Image (cartoon, rainbow, N blue to C red; front, side, top):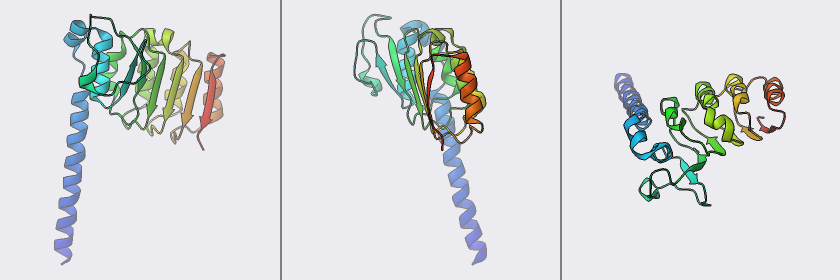
Length: 196
């Protein structure tokens, strides 16, 4: 009986591992950057397609509503629709796909909430994108368990960032020092913390 129990436990854990491995692989495929597609449809359309494919939402300049349906993306002349907001709540975006953000010039707001693949390297990459350094003024990082002090401090490069909301980030160990370093680099920055 004990042997049968061990065999069943082994089979179940193997199945769970296979399922996690499959979804991890699929999410990596969704994040693959297609540079030819970016050239063909422009950076905003290609980034919108990537974000929606990964489960995020986008808001375009001149629109109040968030687009979440890949098939419902607006069509029109190349470069007509510019991404103004990104809500990546519970999406599978990961570092591998961040090259999609390079050509975006109008993103004012980014919300990263419950994103299991977001880590320090993602925030460092996001902060190094010159266009976002100029345009981004509002950001939220919530329940992204792989983010530490290092990733948050990297946001200091976003020189126009005015509002940052941080919540449920267990990787942040020294809240006061981290926020202090950010506010020293970005004097206009208002940081709201809910890290208890």
